[in-house]
Amino acid sequence: MKGLRALPGAASAALALLLGACALPPAGPPVVPPAAVPAAAAWARIAPGLEYRRAQPWPGAELHLLRLDLQAPGLRLALSTPSERGQTLDAMPGAAAALAVVNASFFDRQFDARGWTVSEGEVWPRPLAVATSPLLACTREQRCEIVFEPPAAPPPAWFNAVAGTPWLVRAGRARVPADDQRCPGLCAREHPRTVVGLDAARRHLWILVAEGRRPGVPGVVLAPLAQWLQAQGVFDAVNLDGGGSSALFVQGRSLAARPANEPAQRAVANALRIVPRPAADTAPAR
Image (cartoon, rainbow, N blue to C red; front, side, top):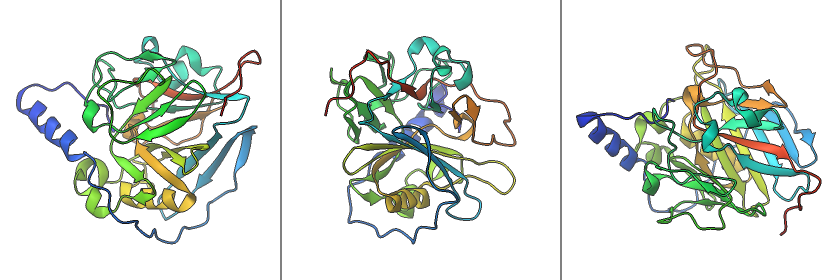
């Protein structure tokens, strides 16, 4: 879907209501997910500690998944800087060195990002809708967590952080259709998606891109997607920008098919990257 847009007057009030509708509901009892359909393919290794696979968990769902071992000594997670905003993923200066690149933040017409956003220790200015934007936050040592209640200011330990809305899985509880009805246009309709999540040990980062808006592949609704991710072992997860922004490049190659109504890559606010760690860099300390 398109990023947040700057809207005047009554439209701004309507947008504020939509953002409020995506606020986190109280945690409820665990939900038993539906039986998981086997993945379309096994995990394939891109590099030591980074794997990819494609899944078709139900008819019309085309999912691409990356799984990063946050303790892998040769890899690190990075978020593109504010100076790279407003470009397509493959055109950003840092894209060429990345093993994998995925779109990240919701954004407005000025490519300001939603929620607290931190790139290599640099906090992005003018954050949007901070209070209703759960986020992935990682230290320099790649100790990562999904933060569901954003603080008043980014802690100094956050080295990379990217926010979205809404939550998909929280402490092992997957959202259900009733949760999606709090934000029906964003959550309960089929769209292309981009998602980040962690397992219970916070050892592995999951990145998912769902194709959509093309014949036979409409996209996915959040509740069934969340329940499928829970069944795969994802313990916490949050939805990032989607729709025409959703894109995935692995070793420079675009893997996710584009929407039929938007065949060209979209300019976005930022990109989440998995890059080789320089030999002189210290491996993640645990």
